[in-house]
Image (cartoon, rainbow, N blue to C red):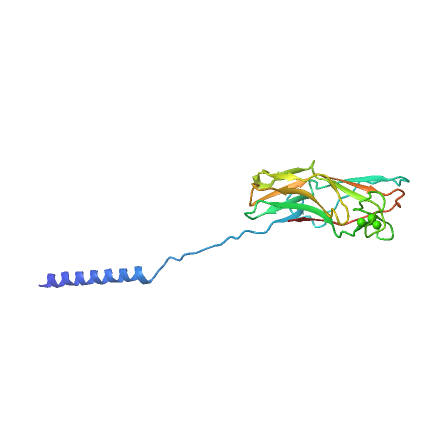
Length: 218
Ligand SMILES: [Ca+2]
Ligand SMILES: [Ca+2]
Ligand SMILES: [Ca+2]
């Protein structure tokens, strides 16, 4: 009789245990579903150094010239190993264009005083029908530059622009490089080597001149 009681107790205890386990599985979830969304970023352009760090104050120094009673041309290069144009495309859109423009269409090279010359005169070395009264014209030829993918990104369907000269109100920006349909997405590229040629008016006063140019992506 005693052993039968024990058997019943054992069955009862097992039954209780089963009921408890069933209750745990249904009501006390110990696993949780975590989620993380990664949104696409925005296409952008920056000037970076050879380590990929942003350059605080990018600059181009044209080769020094000597005063000339005639017209002459200053030359320089936009995009060098320590100041690369870096294009960021953290999106699924393949196409973009990076161009360069004056800080204003009415900008001129200036020595900070009264001496200036133009960067976008359709007449070239002499003044034409634009807002200022000085000649001068800047030509940019990106075609000989080099494009390299960052972190193994391919350069498929990415190409440098062609030579063009600024003309106030007509050519206010010049394309440096562009990605056509089929270019890689979620990638970065570096560009260097755009040739610059600035036509300077005859008898331009000897001084140190500056102008500010801006790169942007569309
Ligand atoms: Ca002008
Ligand atoms: Ca002008
Ligand atoms: Ca003018």
